[in-house]
Length: 164
Image (cartoon, rainbow, N blue to C red; front, side, top):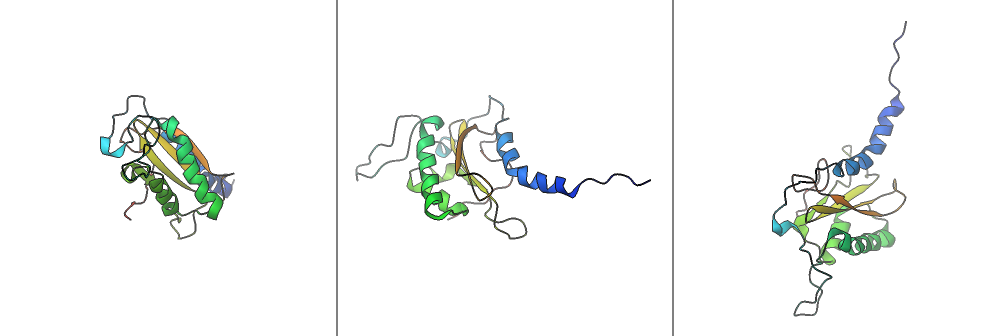
């Protein structure tokens, strides 16, 4: 008698669901996560305040209060180019005043050098994270407030270095 072999579609399903599972796992972080260093987080306040030169300063406030700024930066890049390049989103978030050292981004390509079906990027704000996801495999740009991970990060798994 032949033993039942697992379906090949199961592997494909796991690959397709992996980004959603990664974001979902971030939501499982315990409430008592240690606070990351102050240099990596935005500080609570209201909205961006002008600097002496008249340009907006870094955004301040809770993750929920900053979600519209985060989403706006993400949607500007997506609507202009449908880009699935992490650097485009990180640069847009930096331009919007978010702290580069509080960010993470996933890889633009798969392990076999094919374009990623979607990418995720994040900004740590206190004990929470602003997490965005874009790409042809998602219905549209998506931004959410998620609990931060205990290690001070936002995204589960390997991320690329933001070294530019």
